[in-house]
Amino acid sequence: MNISEAWLLDCGNSLTIAVGDHEMAEYHQQRSYHSVPGSPGYCSNVLVWQNNIVPVMDLSALQYGAGGELENFSVCVLNYQETPKTPLQHLALRVVRAPQKIRVDDEHACEIPDNLQSGILSQVCLACFNYDGLPVMVLDIAQLCSAEFRDLANAA
Amino acid sequence: MAEQNLALISFDGVHLLLPQGGVATIETVSRVERESSESGAIGTLKAGGGEWPAYALASDFTPQTECPPSYKYCVAINRNNQAAFSLVCEQVGTVSVVSEDELKPLQACMRTNRNPIESLLLKDDKLMLVSDIEAMQHYLLPEAAA
Image (cartoon, rainbow over the protein chains, first blue to last red):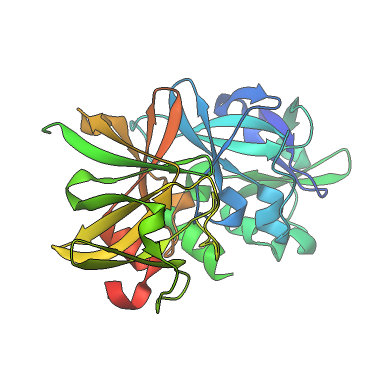
């Protein structure tokens, strides 16, 4: 049995995803954000974090097409690498509550349910598991930030 | 990279940077004649024998139909020595970029075909949006830029 540590992120609208323990950098409440005109509605803000300019993505808006309030939301800053041995990059995900650290084992693995399968995020889903009766997708953050996925999302 | 001077054009909380070499003239907004054949423009800046369609952008870069009272200046921009467009704004300045590393390319997930922003610059505790003249012209006047 393979046990892993992960973080559950509640992205709103009953969308909960998981990222690996090593991918979580920081959780922030009520940061100030800067708007970047012309960017997709689900990723139209950046925050300045440790002298990095980090895109802020709203996965709920991406999955369901509805944007949330842009003021006073919290974010989880994540680490990712485009490929191994390349510099760390960062993405901030909008969350509606503090992330929860959990332990997951292979017995919790499940198929992606139909209601999530039909959404765009299933294209970057590495795995899915049940946690407290809730289906949770594990996302490939590098792929989520890629030009290929952006083109797919913008065409959807 | 040699030191690069960029024109800082500020409006509605936005700090937009464009290549300084493209700035043809800076005039007061009173020089803008409130008629224009260009879609989205508030009028035409006529100065020194040149004519530039004048745009008043909101913070989301949506062209405004009326010039906000706080927009006092109009910056005329040339592309390849031809009048391209002008932007009305609250403040005009110059920013020097000494290293390419200062400019952070806009991440792939934030780019769209319509996005005129090429990179971002954090300077003096301000986030500045870096564009180029061709990209801005394509955004404001897609037919003219083609």
